Amino acid sequence: MRERKSRTEIGWEKLDNTANLFPVIATERMTNVYRIAFTLTEKIIPEKLEEALHNILPWFDYMNVRMRTGMFWYYFERNTNGAPVVREENTFPCSYIESRDNKYYLFRVTYYECRINLEVFHVLADGMGGINFLRELTYEYLRLVNPSIQDENEGFLSEQTSLNAEDGYLKNYRHPEKKSYRKVNAVHVTGEKLMRGELGVIHGYLSVQSLKEHCKKFNVSINEYLTAAFVYAIYVEALHGMAGKKPIVVCVPVNLRKLFGSVTARNFFVMVSAAYLPEKDNEDFETILEKVAESLREQLTKEALEKLFSYNVSNQKNKALRIVPLFLKKLAIKFVYRMSAKATTTTITNLGNIEIEDAYRPYIKRIQALLSASTGQNMKATVCSYGDELVVSFSSILKDNSVQRRFFRKIVEDGISVQIETNGLWSE
Image (cartoon, rainbow, N blue to C red):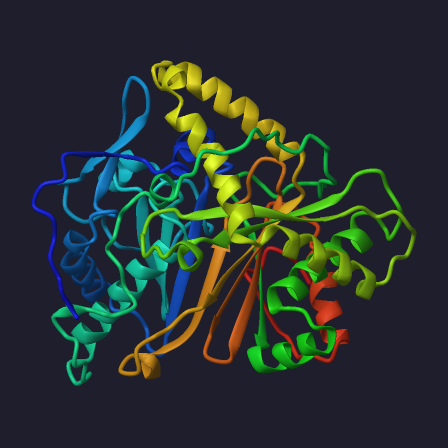
């Protein structure tokens, strides 16, 4: 057990290697904000949630910062403005965080009925860092509203929570071989868009055990199966099951912590790609599943992942590039990002099973997560599980939701029961 402490002086600190991208590419439509939400068994008491946030924020140095613009890079410094205001949800999920209206914080906490929402600008942390923070916020809130909760760790952080803020990329950097990024343009899912600021959401609720049993039949992981189902849905609905010259490329973020022995709460992931080139008309799902699984497994070795992030870190460590002014770096980063976006169809990220301590499980009903859209990716999917419930959440800025419906229809056809919930932007 670790006593809850805060660092008295932070001064300033660099952004991690991945975080350097997000301030450059973020816009009001492509916000680079993600959401993690805990649904409780009782309605939220706003005053208690705000008290809980005030209580825990000083302990989380990596969240308790504001971002500044330097001559060569962005950087963080300690935010001394007090916790941001907790508000009832009144915007669409993952909307742009205007730091000036948020006491210069890069995250927000909102609530709706029984749900606590944490929305984070990706520059601060990846999903694991967000889960760390929201879990402790929820524990503190539940202790305030339920004094009868028996928690032997009260006064301490839970064992699952890390305050480590090391840059895992720099710590594990190895001098890379020369490498070039994929230049092949990928299939993009396009169509008429929702109104600016709107984000369509569909949640699908599945049984983890049922999904595991089905995946065993094909000798694939849950992640491989769900990724293949996403590829299949795009192939059927966006390409109408026809062959083409462009691949469907689904980015899959990989949490690097276990492989590299890190517990950092900051960004520490890389993107691998599940690529499928539709060479035939009416390809069956089993063939697509086999190709997607093979594509992913080739990349999921420690050596391959190390090469991926080491190449990016090498650019950051390049002495000549380090002295290039930020405004020129931003032009170069935007150019590289746009080229990379052309080679990507969408993203599916799996946060895995989210652990909750026994004392709090009776009060937490459900956990969900969402991603914002980004350049070239009008639709994305997020997966997480809690207990036996796995949630697949689609976020989209398109009016058409045929890809999402095909995805869930495929799962139901495979004998897995799915319950659907939407935020009401679509009629069906």
